Image (tube, rainbow, N blue to C red; front, side, top):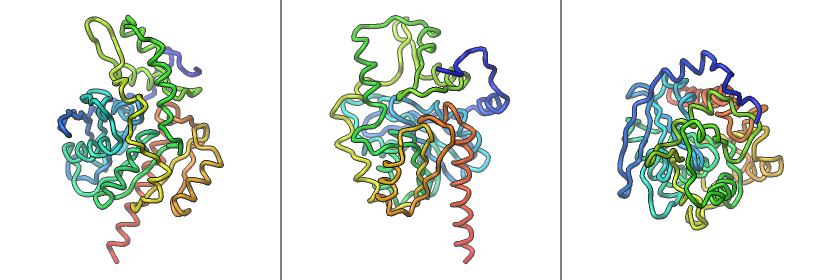
Length: 303
């Protein structure tokens, strides 16, 4: 990968963002502990952030603080991920339920905006179907119309390469951090922060926090994003990364499924994981979209 040298110093904007430490909390959904991070003051408009498959809430650490001045922001670890508990089976509908429970437990009042990346975009669409009346709008980031989330195949292959225990120090496992699917650029300071929070020590060995069970064939309950998009009744924006997973033909299909009524925002020169290579561009897209929606709402309320 390019731009992965540890010698690259973190820029000031990144240092300032991480200095805004999140609150940590948990709630229980169907017998499973769900961990979340939260930023911003209580009582402000809500923003819920949903990570992708195999990721966790730390992926938003350098993104969320840029909205904390105007919004109460909550990012959860879905079950099987991060510091949340594990289940025998994982279903998209259950993850959607967990996300809304975390939003409420984390202090979001009223109708939140929901932003979901990759498999998290699938979960976000399920949130919109199941909890649409409780939302202000959703943004789906580079979630393709595949029959399975894009993280599943490469993560399954990687998980099965090491059937026995692999001994690792913290330095060794962090050095192996790679997003799935792979992309050419990962900003080293971003990757390092995420890697360090995506592992834990078990009996003297450092391992990834996610449960391999999230990659089994029976997961997600037969969910198909293609089926969910026409059901969306909430305000929606779709983000397409220039070097991501949505090609021109798929973008046309998505527009058709959404009846050509949803803006398709392209992030220039970004891979599938924009928070890893073009975080400031991603932040600008989220803020601009939500800001435009809020201005529209204020104008409508004023009559």
